[in-house]
Length: 330
Image (tube, rainbow, N blue to C red; front, side):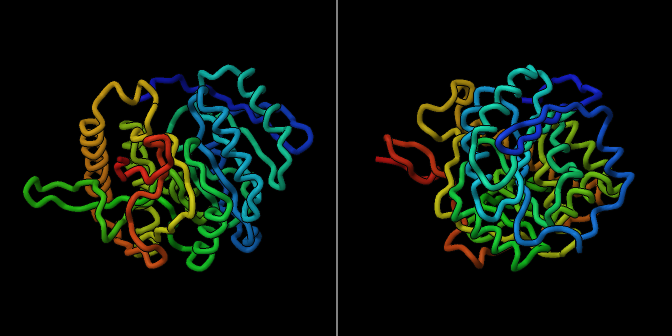
């Protein structure tokens, strides 16, 4: 459902530098500022670690978000963690409380809370001035990987840094009967890395946010409140002419998957199959619109050379046990 939220002309930053935190206020729309300056010189960026950008929105997920942020901050391949809080209606005192909880975490990497000026999904790819690494990890607040899997994915990215790397993938295809692009999941190939867990060059953030070539496509993301991940896959594939790389995670808990037993009531009000159909339809429409506006189809397929299969890797609770979300439990 599209979030109808006001756009504020400011954002709040809570900086955590253990063992204390600083609460500060920055005024002004930052997208214009970022696009008025060139991308950071790649030669000056750190290459042995990455910056993690976690998208946060739901207040009831804050305990989970705290745990996930702590995991990333304690991982050796992570230089910094930035929580992008995208719910403008959240009271400031709620984020202050979150900052206090995070300040007690003993971890190598600093954690920052950045209050976004709106709920725009395009802001997930905003080129933050504080990013000092060549690699950025985009992730959700309900995906909890283990440190070993995070480090392994980063090592795969370092071996081929031009491409997108991730744990969760989907595919595009063309329906000859309907004469339209579709969003699907195939067993042998993939072309779209999801923002549940996506590693990419920091430079791509500037290209996504500032390139005139993608201005109308970004407007579609705003209109549909969806598909920012698909657009980033378009951006990268258009530049490198290659598909993404799927990495097998040793363990990654997908708390947001509706196939979890005991899931949120709001996620169970509508049948899972009907919601999936509607979701795929909307995403297929995005692919079609992006293709039309760009005038070409840049997406390329990947075939998973570093994994055994391309099935679901998220873990869900079924029958009191953690199993892959696409498996039935008897």
